[in-house]
Length: 368
Image 1 (cartoon, rainbow, N blue to C red):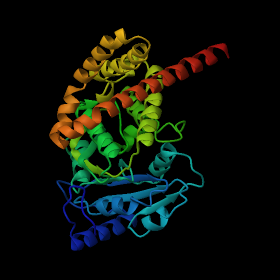
Image 2: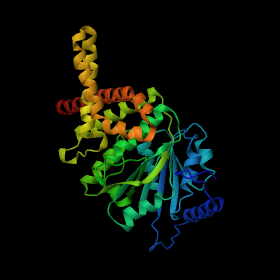
Image 3: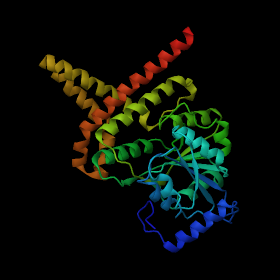
Image 4: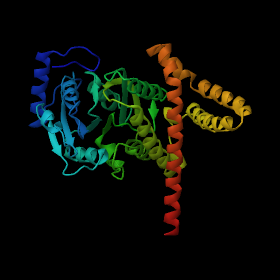
């Protein structure tokens, strides 16, 4: 039924056998030998109007080469056919009475889950067969960390330019976060129940997909739990972006992330690929590009500054453009440069909003 995340066709016989294992898990954990007993993984998938992708997500998941797992689909009051489609698969459906957001849905799923490992998966991510086994390897067999995140596959189900760009931009910045990291990611992120509960779960103040996963990572680090980035754990992302949705998404997330960064104590702040020095230089260059363009329209002599700003911006992003050229070719790079400028400009505006929110709330608390 369908194919796995790496594009290989699934075996019907194996799929049926796997589904039988899942049925037995739901009646009570079934333990098999795999260098000792396999720990039960609870896969938690929050969904809201995900009819376009939930069946494929579950099909890939249930074709896993790891046996001992349960699947909980937490329906956040969808208005489409998400629940009906999910009910066809061997999974447990948990329904929210109202739409409360991804953080609340994930917390609800964790309370209903039975596993000692909680694996949070987005409905539009189709993981490879090896993913669950790799999670156990990292968290149990090697015992090197208490949480682990994966990354998107380079191939993308949505063939649109904006979707391809965002997918590659995410991969590139994640790949700059090697080894142990200070943040968590719920598109494909697993955590031991001990670490999750010690960190207090997801902050339900966030009503939509925002910075709740990054905050959870900060809190886990504060409690002394290690988070590992393992790029062997891959999944195809199926999300269609328009220019508007792409800019809106980056604006919203940058505002939330910057506000969170200001809130955390200095020793809790943990940089990652999206917040490294190169990206900061590109952010400043994007602001300078905008300002110099306005000045150039008033006086052509400012054109030199505008050209210099472009040079700095392109130079700061050369590693990303080389990555794009390798994956998509030179023409894709040329199409990307102006879009990349718009993204950084949007992220900069979001950063200003996040900073203003932080100081406004801080002043309000002090005066109150």
